[in-house]
Image 1 (cartoon, rainbow, N blue to C red):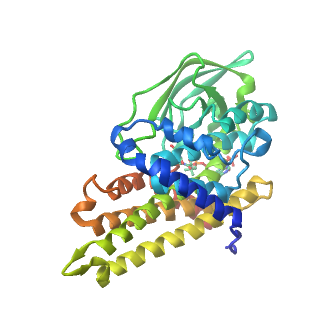
Image 2 (spheres, helix red, strand yellow):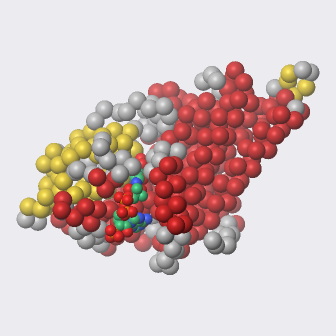
Image 3 (cartoon, rainbow, N blue to C red):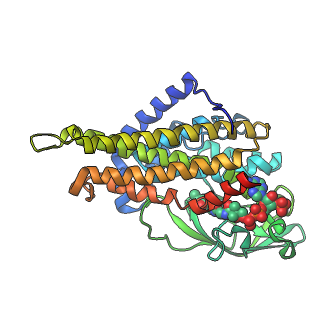
Length: 387
Ligand code: CAA
């Protein structure tokens, strides 16, 4: 086990204040409508781009803001506090591009990170398939070499921001005899001939972020769009998740904070039996537990973020895999409990869409599922502890 590593700097506090102000003004007022219509919020995207908050993690050498992993967590957390769907803009931009940051040639990084940093393109990550979810290495999508191109065929599923993203990191089998070591990663563009998208999934939450299949029908990709060496794609995919499960934890923290803040305001106003319901010890204990679970998950997430930052800067962190799974699992389980309790504290009102907490409860659920179910996280943690 390791001692806490991070010490938020004054810049982190200032960043949080700035993002919260933007989120309160431009994102929170749109959240219910985004959920209701299920449309991608281009206005929120533009507002994030205008403040350089849409892909904060991209290093300065590629034209990005160069935010460290903790700053990126804070941005995602504060956007998610207002609107979970919108928080997937900075989170998925990170997920799509970390494979490049970890493994791509300098040329590929220059070509694809700069448009993301400018806000001209978003970047999604395509690992899962209809028959390869938790067992990601069982993927069937094929990439067959043909001279200096690879020809891609197959279907990716559950791809967040599919259709609105211009670029995709796609994992595909280049050597079917080699198992996980026969998988390679590629950059695919939305405009590549033969790329198409399935209908939008009809989901419980994060409705303002499109989730669709990405279908490849004889898509010809120049060989120089391979990320890293042939056969390293699965490792790159899992190494990416070591960094980005922390951003899902951040999203969960933000959703939970939004629900807790709303519930605290409500119980102080709502009067029953002649006094605010906040006066009742049963309510106070619920609020105390919610705050406690949230803060515990936050400290774990920030600690994991500090590890991620060190690893990104070339200092190997043997416990990063464990800590990123632990942070994602703890924060998402906490978010589910906290948002469910927030609905409970609002009683019948909490169960209606006139109040935001039922949306937060629905949005929280996905954080226990994507970037690896919490059962997979527990498996990853146990493997690390027992190895
Ligand atoms: N970093 C780098 N390499 C790693 C690694 C890590 N964290 N973990 C494992 N590897 C390597 C292993 O060393 C091994 O390589 P070698 O054979 O060369 O040693 C290779 O990867 C395969 O490892 P395993 O045998 O452990 O792999 P496995 O098939 O048992 O699967 C798993 C491991 C943990 C179950 C993995 O499949 C997994 O995480 N599954 C969940 C999938 C997932 O998270 N999907 C999320 C989709 S993205 C998403 O949801 C995003 C979104 O929409 C927002």
